[in-house]
Amino acid sequence: QVRVVESGGDLVQPGGSLRLSCAASGTFFRIIHMAWYRQAPGKQRDLVASIHSSGRTIYADSVKGRFTISRDNAKNTVYLQMNSLTPEDTAVYYCNVESDRGVGFDVYWGQGTQVTVSS
Image 1: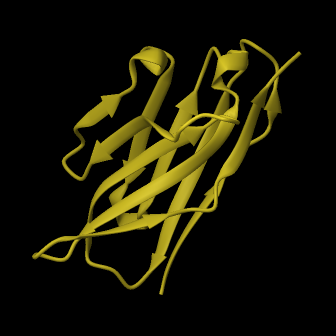
Image 2: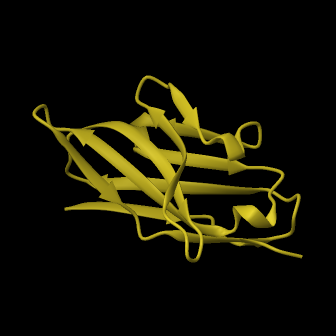
């Protein structure tokens, strides 16, 4: 059984910072991608940032220059450093993990962590 657990969500004022963490545990094949998605009320779940096992990263345009994704491959953990937060960043943030089984990918999701940006 695979567990994906996020942490770090909180209420923060505009202009503030937060650091989200996500750890994957259990039995799985080699993790290829780890990513953060977010979903605001009434909206679809969108990609925020992803990081390949090689270190290659992808960011949504809305967070470029403000958010930084990083990972610790030895700990199967991914982080999201969020700076200069705005109310538009308010959402539930979900961690996504993809592992390569050789003939396809297994995809796992965490339960989400709430980030609220408000004064």
